[in-house]
Image (tube, rainbow, N blue to C red; front, top):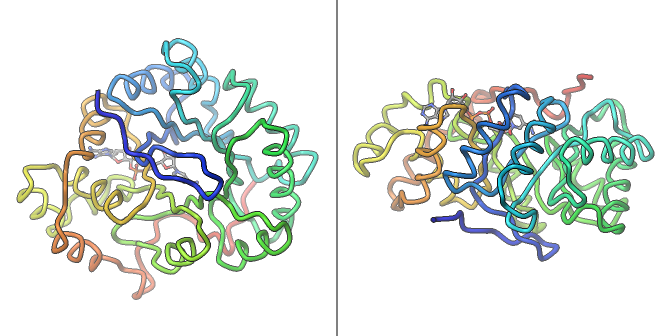
Length: 281
Ligand code: NAD
C-alpha cells in the first residue's frame, strides 16, 4: 500500500505530509471514517479536544490493528485550558479519550492573545515533551509576533505551525517565517472547506490536464510547496480520492498559476478567524 511521504521536524521526528482531519465529524461517526482513512492509506490523523471526537478517533485506533508506532496522531489544547497546570490536566484528559500513552504531536489550538497565557501554555507543552508524553510540540493560529515571543521566552522552536492555508489564502509571510526558523507549515481548511475553490477555472483546467480532480490538484499543490496537509471528508470515495493526490505531480507552470490565485493582497481569502484577534471560549 502507498503511504504518504514524511517531512522531518526540527526535533528529528517525522510527520506524514498528507493526513486526515476530523473537524465537524461527530464522535459516533469518527470511528468509521478514521478506519476508512486508515484503509485508504492515511496514517496521520488531526483531531482536537474541541472537536468532541477524540474518543471516536481512539476507538478507531484501538480497532485498527495498527500499532501506535505506525500512526501519527495530533490533538490540540483548547483555549479555555490555556495556562501551565490546566494544560497538564487537559492533556491527560485528551490522552484518556484517545487511549494513548504517548502523543505524536500536541498543538496550542489558538494563540488567543487577549488571554496572554500562551507562553505558560507553551512551557507546559515543553515539560510534557521532556517527560516523554509528547514526541513533538507545536502551535496553531499564531502570529509572527506570537511565535517570536514563545521562542524568545522558552528557547524552544515549535516543530510545526498549523494555520488556515489554501490557494486563495496562501500565507506567504508565515510560510517564509517558518522556513527561516525551521518550523514546518501545516495547512488547515486546505480545500477552502470545499467551496468556491473547487469550482475555480484555473484549478479545473489544471485538473483536466492531469486527469485529476480539483481537490487532488489543490492537495498536490500543498504537497509541492512543502505544506503538511490534512483534508477532511466523511465520504469514503473522497477520502480515497484525496489520498490519491499523492500520485498527481504538478509542473512549475501549474504551481505558478495556483500561486497567483492568492487573494490576501486584496485583504480577501481568509475563511476562518484571524489569530491576531480571535478569542473564543
Ligand atoms: P477542508 O478544506 O479539508 O474541506 C473539507 C470539505 O471539503 C468537506 O467537508 C467537503 O465538503 C469538501 N471536500 C473534501 N474532499 C472533497 C473532494 N475530494 N471533492 C469535493 N469536495 C471535497 O476543510 P476543514 O475540515 O476545515 O479542514 C481540514 C482539517 O483541518 C479539519 O478537519 C481539521 O482537522 C483542521 N482544522 C484545523 C483548524 C485549526 O484551527 N487548527 C481549523 C479548521 C480545520
